Amino acid sequence: MPLLVLYNPVSGSSASKSFVESHVLPRIEQSGKVIDRVAATEYPGHAGDILVNFLQETSGDVVVVLASGDGTLNECITTLSSAQLTGPRAGSPPKIIFVLIPSGTANALYSTLFPPNGTPDDAYRLQSLDSFLAGSKTRPLTLAITLLSSPPSARKQPQVRISAVVVSTSLHASILKDSEALRKEMPGIERFKVAAERNSKTWYNSSVKLIPTPGAEAVQVYDPATKSFVDHPDSDEDDPIVDMYGPFAYFLATCNVDRLEPAFMISPLASRIPPTEAACDLVIVRPFQSPTVSTDTLETRDAFVPVLWSVLGAAYRNGSHVDLRYNANGEATSEGQGPPVVEYIRCGGWEWIPDDDDEKAHYLCNDGAISKIETEGRAVCSAATPQDKAGFLVHV
Ligand SMILES: Nc1ncnc2c1ncn2[C@@H]1O[C@H](COP(=O)(O)OP(=O)(O)OP(=O)(O)O)[C@@H](O)[C@H]1O
Image (tube, rainbow, N blue to C red; front, side, top):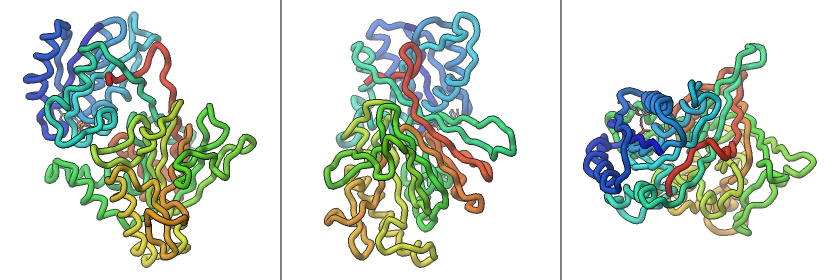
């Protein structure tokens, strides 16, 4: 199988080049496998171009040893998903089998597939490579495909965004948008915390539709009492679509991952109760679910900040936010029978239709990249099942 070693020299702490040269290339060579090309990205978007060129010069399924973060993986998948391959490859996209060398800031996919236990060492980083060299298992990636639609009057084609990790709006999209500007002064994950504080009092006005997975009759919602998914009370076989109204403080969908950083387990049920078909796990916080919030004022937003921090803090403690409940004072607690603080949904797709006059509700993050939904537009996301002969897989 053709083998490409591809690294992003500026991802994470910019250590991928030396790690590839000192650990990855020697290990592959010792195994007797032939490396067809070693390439470094030279600019944003370059990873996809390198991969397309490599495909045009080879045949059959290919292996890509990728030393980067999630953003570069996304670039490979996004470019490939819309590339017009020519010659023998025309009309028959191959399987791309990724071997991940975690070299980014967050490494969400890698740390989900290989949950860290203590400080990562070289052996930790080489597990996907070891799986490849041993001819071990692969796992297909589910893709979340988001269409950014303009208002019908604009008569424009929707823009497509593909994600293999996360699609979000609200606080998470704001954090990613603002943290990019902090990257130079804070190369590590602390920039996400600084950006979170700056956005903690913002609520986002939007309406949402939730659509079940093809194999389920109803949208699924996590029930902390039974610690299982149950049919959403507003979804059944006759009328499966759930309508949800804001304001929203947090709205985030993941696929393939249970965490966005090694310790930030925001969608823990993805691994505790794995989906049986392509699905998005949605983590939603709506302040009006609190028994003490019924208006959107500066005071209620101020008062809600501790609830939001409780959710995000509990996500860092083994994803325990999914079991938080409100007490009578509107505090998030891990006891009692109050309403769940987090609405944890499993569905096949969703729509986000931001209120026209709420500019911040128009930002969307997909695998770290920020897009803006047009005024009167919407984002429509669905989880896609990988095909048999094409698609993206990862060595695990
Ligand atoms: N040579 C380059 N110079 C500048 N930017 C580059 C170069 N090569 C790739 N990039 C860009 O670097 C960005 C960050 O890469 P990547 O996502 O792999 O790392 P990260 O952001 O540190 O990690 P993570 O996504 O896991 O948090 C990508 O969006 C990519 O477009």
